[in-house]
Image (cartoon, rainbow over all chains, first blue to last red; front, side, top):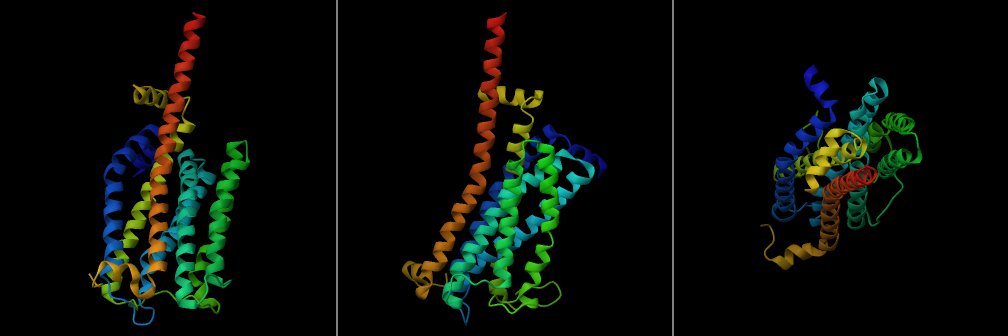
Length: 247
Length: 63
């Protein structure tokens, strides 16, 4: 365990292992996504109340779930970077932000298009929708804050603090439909209760959610690799890699 | 397949425009998530290789 922790701190090792992982992780993510979406959009039965508009669930829910989980990953990486000054944690924190922002945007966009046929409007300023919009601003805030500092150590500290403070928003998003009156429906799948969704609709949703988790992992690893090269441009292993790649 | 035909799947009883618009944007987001960092990585390798070449030619000129 400790040896893995030490290896994770080594940029050449992380670059090499992520390259090997991505070789099967990217195809696995794409195949799972195609299966999940085709199953949900074309083969699952329609909802008895919402008809076919509910099929947006196969994109909306996975995007939202992974956007929230991704924020925890970013905040934990930020905490490790802040406490133990581990550079790889800082790289991981920076890599999570654009991926999380893209998925949060997708969750908001798909929610807006689901809202029109279901609620009669694209947007409402209710607790769930607004707290997810804040999540998007937190991700964008981390990205902007990183670029705002010339001193990268200060940038890393500020981003870690922002991501940790912003973590309070995640339970608010999750519980917003219970704490406030909301047009948004309550959670369909809970750890403590039987899901209120039929198995024929739940299974493609699980496949689609797995696909989004795999995509998040792939995108973060790819961002980490690019960042490792940029930060290590003066190191021997990166220079050897760059010379080799151009031959 | 739940739908009888391709046109029924596209129309989805009036909801197709919402469902397929979300699907198209999702595909674009997924493509961007996978393509942008790959391009950044390749661009970084290219830039670093260029810097190394310039350094080598400068060193050759000096010597």
